[in-house]
Length: 153
Image (cartoon, rainbow, N blue to C red; front, side, top):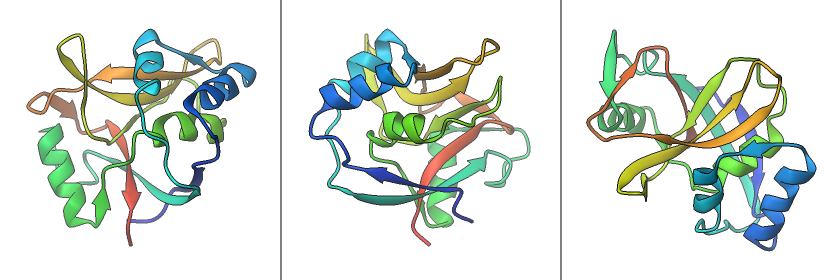
């Protein structure tokens, strides 16, 4: 898979400053995303190569579970993102198209008894969002759903 973006991680000394940067850039985030950001470990300073792939690009004609998506991605030398990729990518990817939504392939996080992953969206009012989207290991994702993975190629 080709690298889609290279982002910087570990650029903030604390989660509080990372969250403040979102506020300063007028990026909105859901309560779930705010809760999860308070819990994420920050990465050491560095760069991460990211790949953006659809469920169809991973070889599924109709739908696939999150587990199947992650297994297929691993065959392409793609791995789960550190949780910090969600807010960092939101800060560094400001040109997202209106109505576009992408999901961060990451270790599932539990909030209120349900599992979630970060997602990025630009809504019809041109507002950039960082959200925590429901993601169940056996739940089905449509072939057009797109996920960001770490590209290890």
